[in-house]
Length: 97
Image: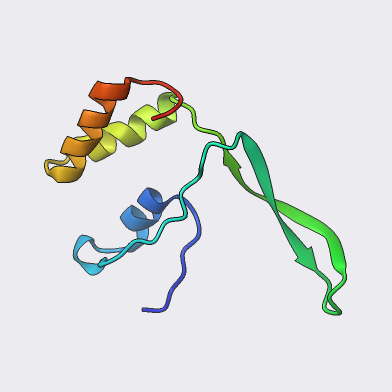
């Protein structure tokens, strides 16, 4: 309760949470902006610090990692699997799915 996880939601859910323990997963989905985003830091006095870290890349790709994630989701029976398979049937394996 009250814990914020940062990272890939599917990985976080599998590694840290029991299946029956999640009521809501709030996502701020990427929009395929083809941009890299960094997190910037401030000094204690509020001035911009020179340090930053790579936060995430907002570029969609259909690659081996994406296919593995798709397979992991669709191997489980249920509505999520059905919807994902329908998207794949409609869109195919391209950089927009």
